[in-house]
Image 1 (tube, rainbow, N blue to C red):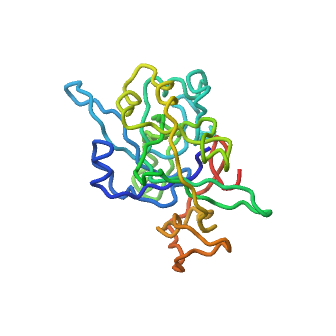
Image 2: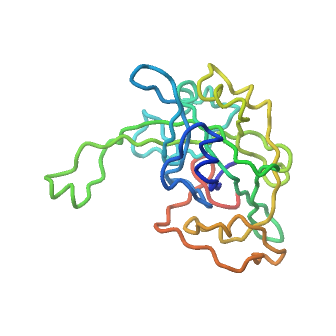
Length: 263
């Protein structure tokens, strides 16, 4: 299961890998549910020509038909995404790439859940398979400005996304029973625009290296390069600088509805 990841390679590398410039402020070492995070998807211009665009939907998929009480899904199972009512339309019509530098998983060891960071053996960025949705909330949140203007305005559309998961393979299987579906670069176009590309994408599982990292990653308000760096067996980072807190901590929920460490 993918419940926390990182995306921090430079803008030139982002554009080289995904064929589009990244959105502003896209880098994070601790991407967590409910945050607005970068995805790459197909866009249609005014002449009807297809191209790619970068966007920043919220991580936690809510289908277009859902009411305001719907609990967001951060993951969608690849085995059932075609048939699940929450996801089937998005799988057919609104697939996206979720750029990543690496991701985190937790493993129970010596009576505690210890975080590990996974990155490609090559060190290259990669893309997780995603689906996205646009939904208009039933009600708008009214702030002070809205009351000053005479009342809340009509709700604005909200875009959300989920990461597809599969049964874990390779190194990841030693730490968790699920892993994100990784799209090989040669399958980017098919994932974004193909009729039914899932089987082709699943046929090429990715390989990862893993190392233990600081428990500071457990707190989604922490966001700094130190979170991805190896720690000694004592749990202390090899570099002593503490992670910097992220301004504005977000809630952190788990399972296919949202993510917290240790499941």
